[in-house]
Length: 76
Image 1 (tube, rainbow, N blue to C red):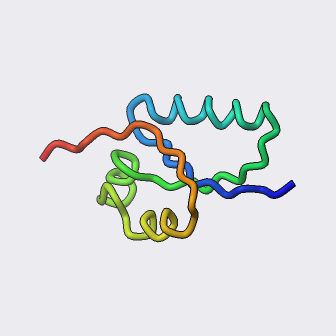
Image 2 (cartoon, rainbow, N blue to C red):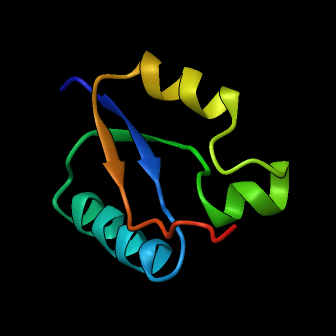
């Protein structure tokens, strides 16, 4: 069975909780997915001082499938 690489953007707020449960659902169903996690939004701001780092964009462009959790819009 071919393993599909999927970009996982957990998001922020409730996003990480929702996406982690969805990942568990795919795992329980034995769907052959390799998750490639990318941080955007608040987690990226805290880590890189940028809500959408260039490396994240490069990773997103590399794979045809993306699963994205909710993201908030930073104020300011």
